[in-house]
Figure 1 (cartoon, rainbow, N blue to C red):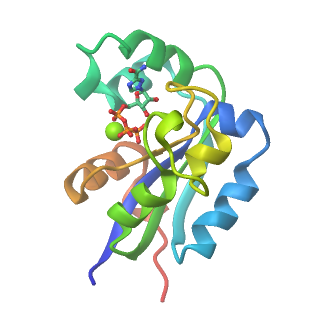
Figure 2 (figure 1 turned 180 degrees about the horizontal axis):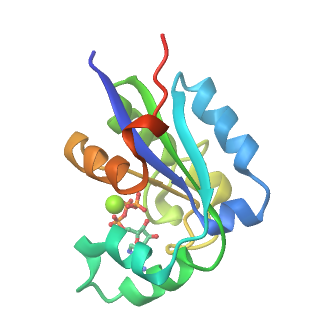
Length: 142
Ligand code: RTP
Ligand code: MG
């Protein structure tokens, strides 16, 4: 198994319900190392840039409004097969379809306010990590 890095966001609805610590505990219990982290309140421009791939989609405006509605936590997770394992831990995008025990089953409020984001491929992880973190903000350890 390859050691990978993936990019994670704890979205505004999960921060608002005071679930940062509980979600970090789930990351660590699943074997991920948190190797970079910070709290941010995204501007409209930052959110639009991050979700640029979705800009023609009907939900884009609602997504940007939601993602700028309050603070978020952004982090880099490292571990074996991290991209796929983190997506599995999050559960389905639509929380109605998220399996019991996944983060979205436990913390999502709606399709838009679905608690967490995770990169969908190694290439998008690299792009998303670079969007939010400089090299010297990433602290890998053995
Ligand atoms: P994410 O990027 O946040 O990890 O979620 P994802 O890959 O599972 O879903 P994606 O297709 O990339 O969509 C990004 C986010 O947009 C919102 N969304 N709303 N109402 C809708 O039809 C709809 N579809 C997507 C969700 O917040 C989703 O996480
Ligand atoms: Mg996505």
